[in-house]
Amino acid sequence: CEIVGPGFRVLDTLRVDTTPEFPAAPLFPWDVKMHQENGDLYAHGIFALNLCGIAADGSYAGIEKAKYDEFTQGMLKWCHPDASKRRFDGMSLRLFNAYKPSGKPFRPTGRATVVYRVRSSDCDMYNVLFQARVPSMMESCHGRHDLLAMYVNILNSVRPGYELTVHVLHNEDSALFLCMHNNGIVLVAFGHYGVVRPICQEEIKMGSVPGTRLKLLKFLSGADTPKPPPCAEYDLSLL
Image 1: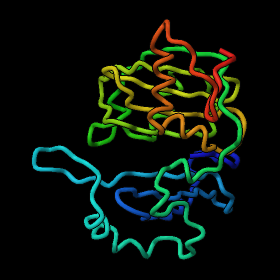
Image 2: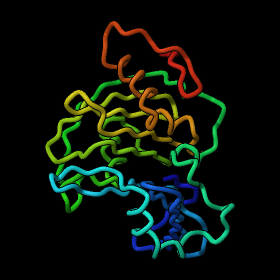
Image 3: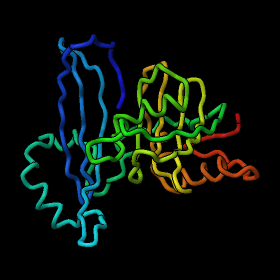
C-alpha cells in the first residue's frame, strides 16, 4: 500500500473503493483506492490472497480450477468492466507483474539484526498475524517514523509469542525486512521512507521470488558467506 496524498485528521472519513480480479486459480487479488472527503486520493495498493481448501486432516492448499470457478462465479460482476484496466490474467499470476520495473536495483548501505516478539495485538481474531500491523512491527525493528509505502508478504502463519529474528537491509529511504522463525522465513516486508514514490517490481521480487530472498538470507545469516553478486533486484556492494 502506498500513501500518495496529504495526511488527514482524526475522525475524518476515507472512502475506500475496491475492485477484485479473478484471473485464475488460486489467486484472488484486489485493487484498493482510499479517497479523502474532498475526493483526493490518499493511498492505493494491491492486496492478494491464495484461495485455499482445507482437507480432513486439517492441511490446506490452493484450490483447483473447478472449485475456484464455483467460488468466484457470483463475484465476477465486480471486476473492472474494461479488461485492459485489470492487472492480472491467467498467464500472469505473480504479484510483481502488476508493478512496473524501475530499472534500478536496491542498494543498501547498512544492515542490522533485531529480535521481535510478536504481540497478541499484532494478530487478528483468529490469533494469526494481521497484515496491517506489520508496518508498526517493522518500525520497532528500524527506527524510521516516516513510512509512506510498504510491501508485505506473509509466507507462513505467525502467532502471538513467536520470536522473530529480523534481518534489515536499509539505505536513506528504503528498507528490506526478512523475518525468520524456526530457521525459516515467515514474513518479508519492504518499506519506503520520507519520499513519495511508487513501489517497483524489483522490490517485490526480493520478497516473493524464493531464490532471490534465500540468497540474501544465506548472506545475512552466515558470518563467512560471501555477498551475492549484483543483480536486477539488489546490489550489496555498498555494505
